Length: 505
Ligand code: BES
Ligand code: ZN
Ligand code: ZN
Image 1 (spheres, rainbow, N blue to C red):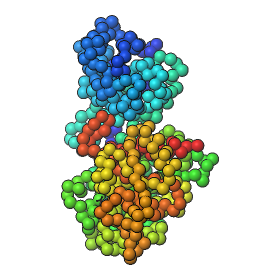
Image 2: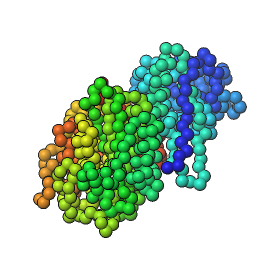
Image 3: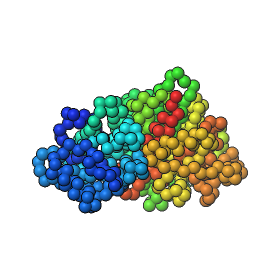
Image 4: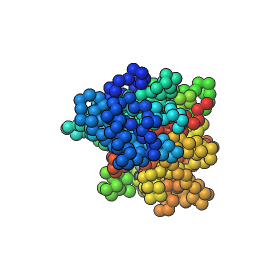
């Protein structure tokens, strides 16, 4: 993967020594509030202009409202962007993240190099650290483009974003917020890029190399098992899926020991890593196949989360596993009707070779429990088209065996605004994946597809607390919007980070 990542620099500056050095000044404005509450440090004429715009009600400060004021001059600020952030009482970080992303995009349209924003306006809302984290995350995510394969690339002009503060005792919280926000934004963008890479550039071997690269850069350990080593581990179901491809599979194992005092507590993350899913003999129509380079969105999410957990030194032990392969068609491929084994010992009747993800996942889940002694399991996968019918591309579908664990996920979801929704797991659904000729079958029929796919994985988690996240709807988007960009959304990287932070002790 040739890389040209250039991230914007976010920095804190004291108002005492700050002298309007940025080309674009953002002024965040709460709906229905007064301008004189703000400590603007601007010329009187400029303040008069802003005052006019506000008092003439052409700008009210509603959330998502932006007003650009071009000052037509050479000195800084050259333009001011009024950023509506809604009513103070209705303020949420989720809305704020979108507001800031929109503002940053506007500054990019103006071809600004530098921006500033005064944090003085955010007293008594919530912790300054959270505000700054959200703002920084939004700024990093807003201007992403996947254009590395274009002959001409349009690099963003944005280089610097200064956050202005008034009181020295705020500095620690601000710098902490910047650091966390930038790292989380970058984790999300890494996941997007991995998803956006086409399958001819990113196969199982290259995905493993990318994991290795991230591990070296951030400081987590990466072990890669080749095909012979995977055979040695007896990962029969995984190997069946991988068999028809000319590109051999890789088992990617990433380890981060952040809590040596509680060595025995290990969170096992498992990400679906189909670098391409043609459907196999149960072949997909071309229209469904074109986006199937994205079938490793779960792997991208766990790699992204590992970078953030390591860089931010989370106090937890995590092992992340990706069974990376391609689901292709070949004379030696598995067939509908085959009965196959699995690392955990259960036999599986294959009724559809396109329900391949769960076959790779159950061996990875078994591996992380048996070989890495994971005590809690989270799997994340672009697993079913059915989740798109149920929840659209708005929310990730969740199947779980543990209320407490789900509750932590909901908390995490609120922090990062990656929405989740829990699906039921009644015994009737479990009946649907029982086979007449093997222990299980790999599809549960046309109904409740997301639940039966999840419960299939649940058959391999033993008695461990477990969350299954189906991101088939949320990992990809057809259009640019606020901080999201067309293509991979990086869903899961920030969510898994916050989930794991909830489990810190
Ligand atoms: N990778 C697909 C699921 C998918 C669909 C991801 C749409 C992203 C967007 C998965 O391997 C698959 O093909 N699932 C089948 C399961 C079926 C055969 C039971 C599906 O959803 O159609
Ligand atoms: Zn499939
Ligand atoms: Zn798939």
